Amino acid sequence: MQRQRPTSASSGDVWQRTKWNGWGDANAKFFINDNGVVQNSRTGVELPKLLTFAKDIVRKEADEELDDTPSISPDEITLPTPVENAPFTTALASFLNKTQFSSEKMNRLCHCYGSSLRDLYRLRKGIISDAPDVVLYPHSHEDVERIVQAASAHNTCLIPSGGRTNIVGALEVERKDRNRLVACVDMRRMNRMLWVDKKSMTACFELGALGPEVESQLAREGLSLGHDPDSFEWSTLGGWLATCSSGMQSDKYGDIEDMCVSIKIVTPAGGTITTPPVPRNGSGPSLKHFFIGAEGTLGIMTQAVMRVHRKPSVVDFQAFLFPTWEDGVASIHQVVRKEVKPAMIRLYDPDETQLSFNMKPASSKFVSLVSSLIQGYLTKVKGYNTMNICLMIVGYEGENEAVKWQKKMTMPIFRSYSGFAVGSAPGKSWHEKRYDLPLLRDLLLDHGLWVDVAESSMSWSNLLPLWRDVKQSLNDFFEDQGLPCFVGAHISHTYETGACVYFHFATTLDSNAQEDLELYTKAKKAATQAILRNGGALSHHHGVGFEHIPFMGHYMDWGSLQILRAMKHSLDPKDICNPGKLLPAQGTENMDDPTHSFYTRGIADKVPAKI
Image (cartoon, rainbow, N blue to C red; front, side, top):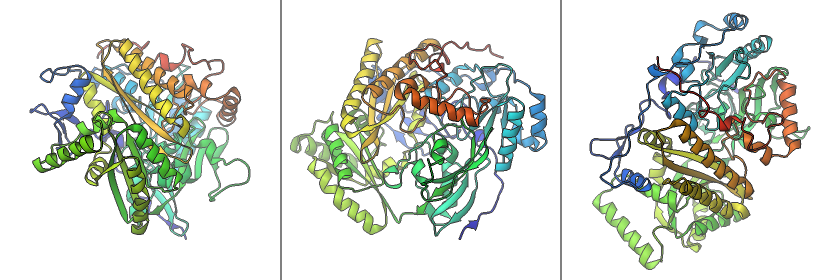
């Protein structure tokens, strides 16, 4: 029987606790301490090898300082004057209280962009070409219904907003009519679990709940959702659904669309739509899949019924080393073929393995000695080449007997591909710092470097060719530019038919903003073209936004685009919901069309004058 949950009010707004120009908690960062060592402000842990590793990448001597490239302050930024729409504002005032809408500068600034490299770079430089005119904070489904009705009646655009961790430009203002008001709808006050059905193992949530809020409410019932993306701490359930998110334990629990039973969404033309809350639907196409991954372009999702499970009694992370990337990939493929399902398998290629080794905290003399002995054994006895070694982290979850069986099945497979077990300590260390990597990007931007990512899913047959092509394309591109670079990758999710490979690429900043962002777009395009020509998905879990729009005409055929356009026109004929995302405008399907925002945002924009 379903149990109703209390309807407690939200306490405060998340944007006030997060960085306006960086990732996550305003009080959490990596910094270079007085000893010249990278340190985590949240844990106090030092990473003594990381700075030297970064200097090697950018071809600096150990005693050379990295560049100092600090962000400007918010006081130095001028936002565009808000567009006014008195009838819309009057309509809002009839059902929202004064704390539920704001045009205050910092509120607007913190809702300008998401968290991509392009977003953070522009914020740090003060390149704000547009911003939402007002930020709205609904408290209920009924608030959202009335907001959408008012927007439809008064020619207003709405951008649904969750944790703003998106990195493909899915949250940015796209204003074709300069006189049309744009409102950002921040869903994060709608963060309650409304009910849980422990017999059916389902729970209904409002979609502004952050990852920790989802899990803490379920934990009180001894349950878990099991969706744990890298952005878990600051992203929302609604954002996960809007972008077809995938969590670290997807190998066991599935991706977000597998966990979702039913969605409630408010659309401009169709009103509120609730998809059937049943385990499976055979009555025509499954409507929930029309909205999962639509990035808020069809309406605003407010609630979802999610499949949940008992909190696992055993959670164990083990680390393994492989002599080559190819050996590691082959071992994962064999695990999949044996139908063994650890919660997670992450395999780092040689470059990302070196990064991981150089992110290790300082070790005791005894641990260092053991590490040296292991390295000697692997190189002298097993024949490993230290520059080709690949690290694998395997997560086992479930009841004790199930975990024992998973280990019994996987260990011999790993050994058969020359895998070497190094125990739980590296796995535990990875698990503890798994959310910290985005904080390193902020540190790099402070010191003259930038890093971006690309990801894709592909068949097992295409995995190795795609991995090689993307890495080669990026290395060749940066070499042609005369720039040092780092290009690494890892497998993050596996399936019966293929896997997801996630790439990081980094280089140095220029002193010219236009040149930096032009370089970024060219590198991003090189990686994306390599992905597409090797049969990869345009995105596995980041979405489309505006960053991937130029490539949609290549990735999807004309008929598929027309179906999506017809859905948009049917449910949102006035283009109220998140305009300019997901779909290329009719006639702009060419990848090289210069009108795409991908080629212009932050490049053609002018840096506004300081106050």
